[in-house]
Length: 247
Image (cartoon, rainbow, N blue to C red):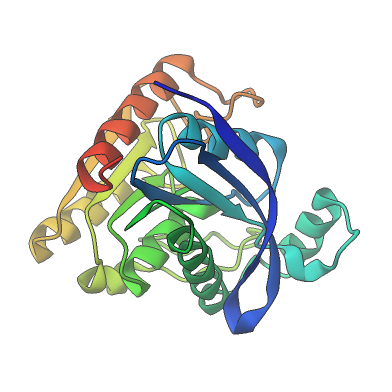
């Protein structure tokens, strides 16, 4: 694996042509490559998410994470941006879809793009991955413990979200789901309900639930991190994208 890459901040056009900050990483070679849109979690556009973007570039993909909170203004710290958006209940679904579409278009505009796009998201980004894959033409989607696809958030929950399971007939691509057996958002029962609905609809998907893991088990900088589940999960992600994005 040749992990030589360029990585840095770029500007892309999002929903309603809004200018968004984004973090891009791409290999330096000239082999054709697929693209991956990384949707950050509710805490925001942070260093750990940028590390994920670079990880995809090291494996041969061009990857980009749009800062979904860019509309809070230039010069505002990522933490303050995230706090302001959380106070409003998160990013509106229509805006999210437009921002992901803009990020995908940016990836496809790069030299050596092969035209195939994957989307991956964690936590709230997992739900948004499912939304994007049901709203846009995507080639492969990875939902990492996305909550509120099946059920509504509990009262007083900071995220305003409506269930997305009614959109399942519009799922445009294969879906990989990675979940923790000890997670409460989503619960294993919710994961099973989504899998059953996709099975009924004939939608290609593979779901894996890891024992001894709860929510955010990929997060190396949080107490929820579970190395065994994360290592196995990353292997499944790269196997899945290898089959569907052609890197």
